[in-house]
Length: 213
Figure 1 (cartoon, rainbow, N blue to C red):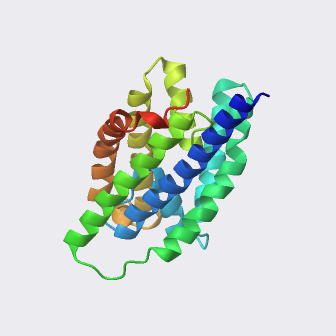
Figure 2 (tube, rainbow, N blue to C red):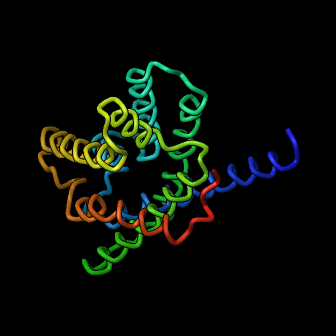
């Protein structure tokens, strides 16, 4: 591998690592806002509320489940897909760290809404960096992409359908086991579902230098 390729690879990995940290931090912020979790953290948060497991442990298991579903759909165990396995544990560990660190205590509704919106901008930036690095995508986004490819949908439609299914499943799960679907799903979930896509599109225009291809 020549020097240029090594520099390119190092830059891609650096961008990707930064994106994962930013994305995970941003996903944790809406969780702490406690007015409805973003779709990316819905199932892990709900399961953590219903079991003794931490949110990070639940996130790792959820991402592994998404990876296995991708394998079942594509039947192609590519290197990029298999590398999502260690990524699941890294994201899970960081979620536990950020969840403990981001305890905002008792705050007004206005503060919680603003904190959630800030988190939406942060994790959207993380996703933008990850996509631009062109190394890996998260297992959940990879599953959405695999579903979209199977049905001939663009990624935007596949992601929206995936988020809606995850939200509905979480509401039914918490209604059945906790008798309170709002334990995880709330106004914040709707804000993040509607707002994330346009924000990522804005970041794509504002930060073209993140594109490594």
